Image (cartoon, rainbow, N blue to C red; front, side, top):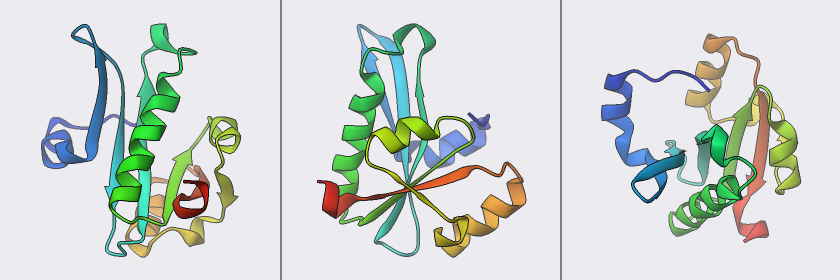
Length: 126
């Protein structure tokens, strides 16, 4: 997971959803949107180490898919350097980086992380 500056978080706080129980944060996820209203990105999905294997990742994914559906997003992308199997097991398909929206593709090339790209057809899977 990439570190995010305080400034980034303050400017993008509306994109984030947090999973909290008993005043304790167990995970978060963000929905990034683009100029093309049909496209979104699942970003910053993380679950606390002590809460992994508890189903919280699936809860965060379902929450984000609900947000995507309510915004009429058709394709949801996810980028990962090491958790690709998790996305594939949940209905995502591998996709070429060139499928990303232009503004995301330029960022993809700039950061040099060579993340794997996954796509989820929100309408077909919901």
